[in-house]
Figure 1 (cartoon, helix red, strand yellow):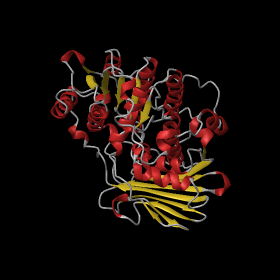
Figure 2: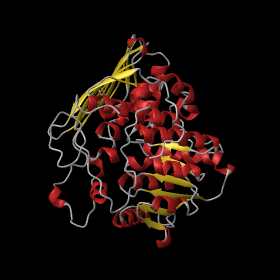
Figure 3: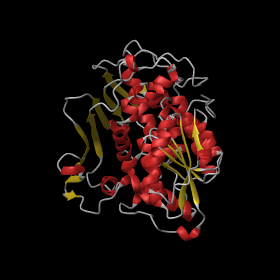
Figure 4: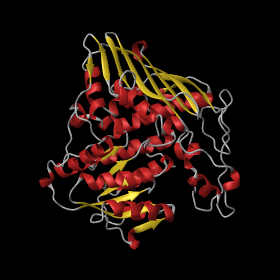
Amino acid sequence: MNEPGTSASTTRRQFLKSSTVALGGALAAPHLSLSNQSFAANSDTLKIGLVGCGGRGTGAASQALNADPNAILTAMADVFADKLHSSLQTLKSGHADKVHVTPENSFVGLDAYQKVINSGVDVVILATPPGFRPLHFRAVVESGRHCFIEKPMATDAPGLRSVLESVKIAKQKKLAVVAGFCWRYDFARRELFQRVHGGEIGDIRAIYATYYTGPVKPMPPVSDRKPAWSDIEWQLRNWYNFVWLCGDSLVEQAVHSVDKIAWAMKDAPPLKAVAVGGRQIPANGGNIFDHFEVNYEYPDGVRAFMGCRQQSGCYSQTADYIMGSKGQATIGVHRPGGTPEVRGERHWVYSGPANDMYQTEHDELFASIRAGTPINNGDRMCSSTLLALMGRMAAYTGQEITWEQALNSKEDLFPKNISWDAKFEVPPLALPGKTRFV
C-alpha cells in the first residue's frame, strides 16, 4: 500500500504537535447530543453510501438514517452479493421511505467502494474489514465526501500513516470524520472522563483495562472451503482470523479498551511498551493470537496495562480501572451494567440520562455537517489505533517497542496486487523471540 508523506520518520513529539489533543465541544459536554439542532443551516437531502454490508455496516446505515430527517441511502457496496442483498432487505424493512438503493447503485466486488463514491453520495460509511480502511478512506476524502469510519483505522503502520495523511486532507477540505470508537459518544463515560481530567482522582498513576471475552468468529475447518474459492475469497469470508484483514483481536476488538486508556491519558502517546501473547486454541489456518497482555509506559512512571483474551469457558470481564493519587475511577467493576464510578475524596456514581452511543455518533456527525462545523475525530482515532498496533508488535516480537518504532514500522501486511482470484498465502503465526520487528 502506498505511504504518502512518509519519507521521513515521525517522532513522538512530532506526533503530539501534528495531532493536537482537542476533543472538541461535543466531547467536553457529557450530555451534549446535537440531534435535531442546526438542520436549518442546510436543508438539502444528504445522500448516504454504505461500503461493507455486514452487521456493523447495516447497523451504522440504520443509525445514519435515524440521525437526520432528510438523509437517504442511495448506494451500497460489498464483495459478496448475498451480504449486500441481506443488508438491503434489513434496511428497507426499517426505513422503507429512506432507502433509495436501486440495482444500478448496488455494487459488488473489490472495486465496489469506488463505485459508491462515484455515485454522487455526500456521506460514506466505511465498515469493511479494517485492512481495507486506508485505501477506502483515502478515496473518500480525496473525493470530498464526509465519512463515518469504523474502528480500527488500519492493520499495520504503513496503513496507519496513510490514514494520518488522509486526515490532513479531510481537515483541509473541512470534511466531517467520525470514528467508530463508540465509547467516546457514551454520556456516562464522557462525564467520568471529564471528572478524571478535572482532577477528581488526582494525578493518574496507573490504568488497568480488561477485555476478556469469548471468540468472535472462530475459524472454520479447512474442509469448509469450496474448491472454487481463491485464497482471497476464503480469507475474506473468514476475515477476523487473518492479521492483514483484522489486525488481530487486540487491534480489532480490544481496541475499544485501548481507546479508553488513550482517553484517560488525554490521547498523549506512551513512550514504549512490552507485551506477552500467543495462541492456545488451534488456529485452523488463521494467524491471530487469542490472548494479549500489554504494559504501556508513559512519562513520569505512569503505567497502563491492557489484558485481553478470546477463549470459551473462561472468566469474562470488560472493565476499566483508573488509579489516581487521590482515588480511583472505574467502569464495569462495582456497579451493574458498566455504570462509571469515582471513589476518592468525593464519591460519585453516574446517574444522568442513558443514550445509545451508536446512535449518538451519527446524530453528532450529521448535525455537524448541517451546522457547517464538521467534527473530525481523525487524530485521536489514529493515535488509539497505533496504541493497539504497538501492543501487537511488542507481543509478536517479544521486544520492547517505542512509539517511534511503532509509527515508523515498515511491516506492510496488505497484498500488493489484490484481486479476486489472487493467490495469497497466510503468514505463519507470530513466534515471540523469533518473529522480527520490521
